[in-house]
Image (tube, rainbow, N blue to C red):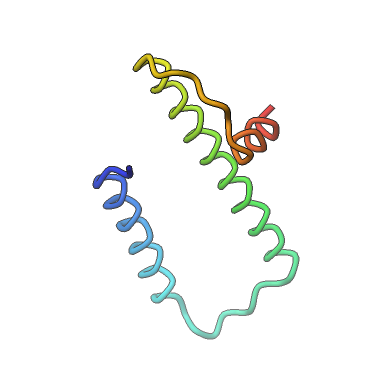
Length: 84
């Protein structure tokens, strides 16, 4: 389950980003297709990093608690393979 402080931090971060976006001038040039592809790659890499850290911490906490090892899911195997 997600901790309330995590949700609060994520909401605050997204709120600040939204306010900064709204305060930008409206007549700025559109982003080029290269910039969009670069941003998509960056967001994908950030998602993979976040998932890798999340799964690693879940397994580490499970090992510390003495929980029985479980078979990794398909998504976990993909993330661990890409993290190598």
